[in-house]
Length: 267
Image (cartoon, one colour):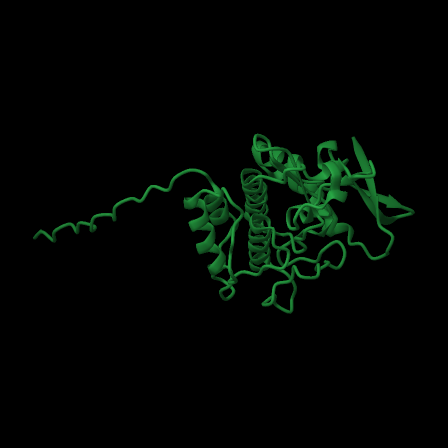
């Protein structure tokens, strides 16, 4: 099912949106499937009287909704993983809360998506607790990112001026706007806050993970968390976070032997 997102302000850049619409055709099939499964990606531009007025995108899947205590269907936003469960949330969050395994998978899913986008030189910019949705159980946790028309090609103009959510800012963001390094800082915010139920946590601060996070994952996450507080250019990227959040064990390889030099023989 498809829906139209309509712009209520003028000035949307048609060419910037065309870059996003054309992107899936340049991806490998597995990457394209991943993009469609995890995002409300712009599928086509909508014009009215010669002016860009919106975009076509897929409808948010039903599993990313839940009924609150009043029976009203609401989006399962990332914020529901960053506060202790409230009774008013109803079925949005299970009565027993969300397990560490689900939290790890939600964080890992976003890191994998960001790795694909960064691999294509795309900047998300506005990563927040409202535009990343989650769903599922321990066996099938998933994410779904909305407002994807805020994404832009590195060095290019966005479709509309990019938003910056309060408390999700990069303190060292350059004056030119968000870039890949800004995204890496916000990825750290997402991982740390989801795994601690801490809305205001910042990289470099104490990291008290929820119970049942495996020790080896906790150690890797803690190391990257401290690095994410460092200067620009030293922050862990999405691939490093994906590996840190994985349940697979790391294999330490022995150092490579010295390179043998060919002897200089006489002619």
